[in-house]
Length: 322
Ligand SMILES: NC(=[NH2+])NCCC[C@H](N)C(=O)O
Ligand SMILES: [Mn+2]
Ligand SMILES: [Mn+2]
Image (cartoon, rainbow, N blue to C red; front, top):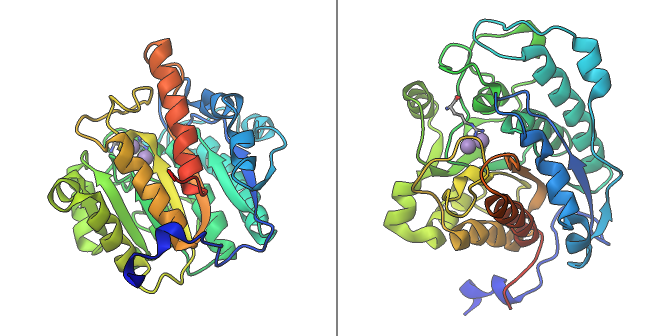
């Protein structure tokens, strides 16, 4: 049964030194989208006990407070839109500083766990990861593709655009010149998509980007989908993996407190299965948990969404059911 071996073998990391060590990068930032409150996501995740939960999984956990970005905001001042793009300078500066923090942790041999905050932050986290691991692949779990360019965006919300910046798509914007086109289309795969704009569908097609929408999850089941996704970006399971998890990939009944919920999403188990399987590869080098917004919906929904954010992180970092 060697083909079924991974689940019961304690998988050691292929890229991190031991003892295994992670750094929580709390990013209370909401400038990539219009709804206030998503900046409180990381604060709630930490207050719910995430650092201690990860310690209990055997990680040495570094957390020295959230990154407040005050200096950045002060330096930016008034932030007029550039074309349709909202808060462009603030988003750019914050992501640039996140890239530095994440990159430094990665270079120290720590696994950065970035807590959002809105998904524009992934422009920073993935830039940081790729600086240390240039051949890393990205698994993007989301209801949305977040691959709009300055030309295709309808909303101007930059949390719908980070992937385009990382791939170097769309017109160049001076304020984002620090974002290098470090990600290659064949090193990116999506799981969970179900609300993709027309312009984004064209971009996915034209760039041959592999995506497993909810249609494929229904058709093949999550087990096959994760296997096919890994076979696409990491066929030999020898490349580092950056997992960027937007909680709106989950069905709104599972993760209600998020800014752009879309019905028909991943079940609780499907979401956790993705995280568990990626941990089992031994290739995970960075994790993002994004778009928890504790100011949306009722108190019970908030508690549920924060708890699910914590449990996704635990699953990606080694928690098993048995
Ligand atoms: N990270 C997210 N929740 N993104 C939602 C993006 C929605 C839409 N496609 C937009 O560009 O505005
Ligand atoms: Mn999303
Ligand atoms: Mn997203």
